[in-house]
Length: 214
Image 1 (spheres, one colour):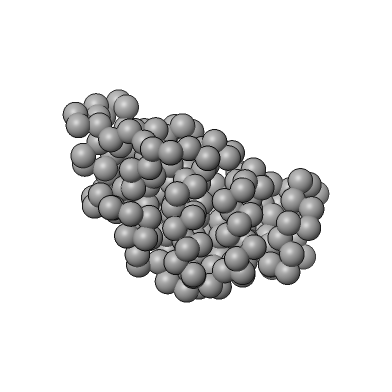
Image 2: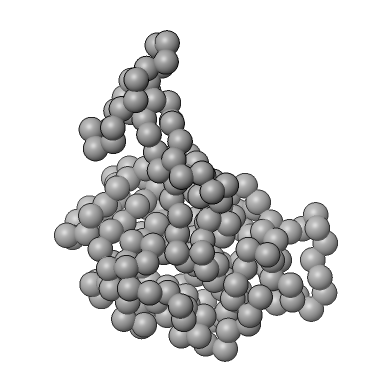
């Protein structure tokens, strides 16, 4: 685990056209310093993965306005987004579907069959033959080139304590990312006890200390 001296150093290695997962449940848990650093790097053609609440936050709106984002995959129904996304291609997913696709990436499963309910048919996704009375839709894993996460605490080995805990979307993003970049305001000198750890340090590449708030 590397301790980044600046936002620019933290996001080094993210390329144009990358899929970037942005964690957080709302504006208060958003890794704003990392989002700002991605925007300032001038990256283009990005595929951003986030929740609808994060999409509505100031730093992410600014990132969208910069023209660097080409695609969005969002957990939510789009009811609050309005015309925020402009000409960007958007796919809305239920939060459980997003989590399943991230879990598949973590497990190196390229694709899987998800059951389709009577109101869940998606014409953009190919249907699979029914098994009995159930219908299934093929879903691809959501492997991200980078994940931007905000942690409550981080120890010297990169072990994380997250607001959303070990079963939240942030933990899944951290494990499904090629580069896992973490913003925190609390670096622990003592090692975290295993019972406290939400994401083990083996998944973490860089940590950016950022004490100011948005």
